[in-house]
Length: 422
Image: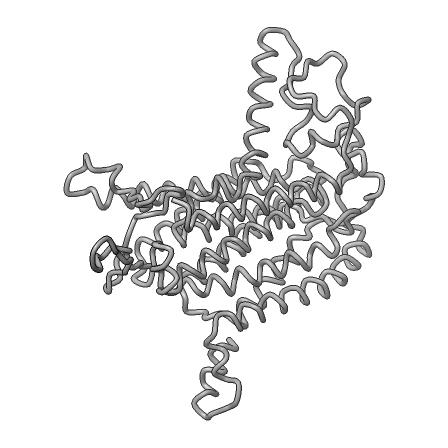
């Protein structure tokens, strides 16, 4: 809203009005505002939740040996993050931008789904929360909305990168002048790094293009479901999901910025996506909100994120990646989330296999994988065979969290490096 106000005031020569055209100015302002709101609103929200005695069920010491320091800690902290990101976005963003609207819809929709899950856990004392099938359906519906919007909206276009010869043994990357609808995406570490989903439907003949969009929409649904649930599993230690997500979003903000700048897009030989600069404002607000949330969520946590935050954050990361056509980069950028999901699936599958044979067996001491590192020796089942027994003792929760952050930083750097290494 402020963007349009200062754009109007610029007509009258009001000093400073022109600064609102600069993405860097609005993005940094969004980050600072989100951080301040998160820190200020977080304090009042925590006091309110404690006054109403709304807290998460006490954790089992076998799962969380450091839980004794976090008794009667409120949950639903995702509300702090959602409020802190929506206010700067609505104030500083261009609200007519299709991509920004999709991000707001994603935040609100998955925030409501996560809130319903936390509500059932806290107020109805049901540890299972919202049934998994309802979460999956909600994520699927969001994926369909995002995919179909990118297909149908006339504003969701790209300028394809093409190579042009300039003298002997010299080429330059330029972009087609006309915007086009495209099902292309970027493959990391590949020189000619555009992959078209419609190439998978060549057998459809004249309907190849339509088939490509079907594949694109299905891919969007899959990515949202995978990343959202991966972020949800990663939310098991103080500061874990918030820190990892802030790092991932910072990297996606960089990718969104270079994709929105025609000169940088040409230099890095990636698709130029007009309008994606507004994603930088949203991403900056999201990073600021998460950093502010860490003020209260760092060990020992004063509030837990809950599914209100984790499901929402995962969905935001997925939709951002899809919009800037970098969804195939997520296995690198979100490898921590992927590892959390794979560890659970492997553990369940291996345990069921042993059960059929009458053998009690597990791959890890506990899953998701971050829990494997904080299991005390006395809490292991003496009758169970463990494949992966390292570490022998238990790491402190803070050490595990920081080491996961360091891993996320390395992965984020690797993802950004793919712009040049092919």
